Image (cartoon, rainbow, N blue to C red; front, side, top):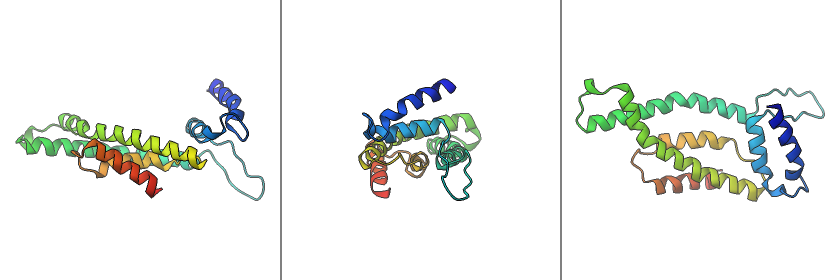
Length: 166
């Protein structure tokens, strides 16, 4: 980890004000803060800074959404099997989760790809950092759409949400 920290510190001036990759600073900052805690400190007044920032807090929210995501996959698979005529007693947990994952994962992948690209592009254009809330948005969006929604509509929906909602 120390090696990676040193490499990122060496590259930082190139992405800072006046550097040759200045316009890509939001992408560099997102990668840096994803891997390491912020090194910023306050210059005046009494402020308490610890290792948890908004990005770390959003990761806690993502971890908290994992049980809801697993339940959504189970329920989707269960509903599919029940609609196909499988008796409730014959539906096991693993099969239902796997069948549900076949519906959930493509939607989640398209959400990450389309929304992530839009988020990164507009962070560069606006010269802002990449918004940490996108990780939560990218997990919540597939949980609220129908499992048979066409993927182009998923891409359009998340793109609209990232552009207009943010």
